[in-house]
Amino acid sequence: MIAAMTNRNQFRGKWALVTGASSGIGAALARELASRGANLVLTARRRGRLEALASELGAQGAKTGVDTRILVADLNDPAAPRQIFDATEGAGLTVDIVINNAGLGQYGAFYASPAEQELNQVRVNCEAVVRLSRLFVPRMVERRRGWVLILASTASFQPVPYLTTYAATKVFDRFFALGLAAEVARFGVKVTVLCPGPTESEFFEIAHASAFKRRVQETAIVARRGVDALIRGRRIVIPPASGRFNAFLVRFVPVGLITHFVERVARPREAGAKGPKEQGNK
Image 1 (spheres, helix red, strand yellow):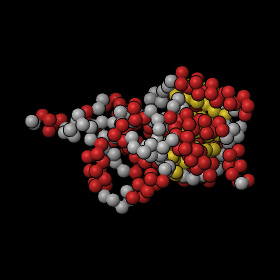
Image 2 (tube, helix red, strand yellow):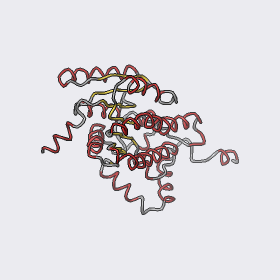
Image 3 (spheres, one colour):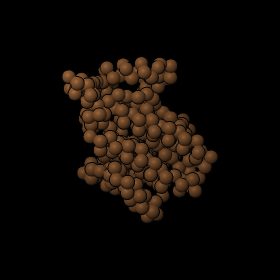
Image 4 (cartoon, helix red, strand yellow):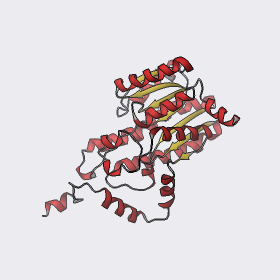
């Protein structure tokens, strides 16, 4: 009981940066951290959403002493991570917790999707994670304390046709987090990768990926498990149990069989799974 209370209070008074905080898992992570007494820097593209969440948390903070600030930034812009750093650590605000949550996805046949949409996923899901981590982690190493949470997905355990780029970027996130965790553990810095399965959020609507929207879990549950794992120093957490089972199962099932099955189930109806050459040879 005492250990549990210590865990809940470990972030009290510390500053946490949450990217992609305007909705979904990002907003849930912000609420979870606030409930544990962490001060928050919320960043995303949509000012209105950030202001609404900051107002909500600010009302609670009036009782708990939690401070909340917002930074509008688009992580598709390579300059955004530096802007975020300059407005926090660069301005004398010690950020002990970095939540790399922001991410993009796009459902559809890769050959037919706009190239820029595919590249945007790489920039936000991979490049921005590296840039932010490279800016904030050295300060954590100097202080001999810090926590980094990186959001991946159960999609990182196997190729996912029609979410091809998204799944590949999440493999990068998972491997990056695990490698970084091993590097910085001796300096007292904890890195956790959170790999949720389908979760209630705007992802499915924005990515047009309703074909994958099955048995979604609540964002609050995902956030709580992610923050619990971060505090305990666990390097990977996969909610829910079905996600852990699938991640284990794919070790023993041929990748070709998995991708064949997923391709048949997820194939866009209008695409007919025929590439440009097939269509042109009719």
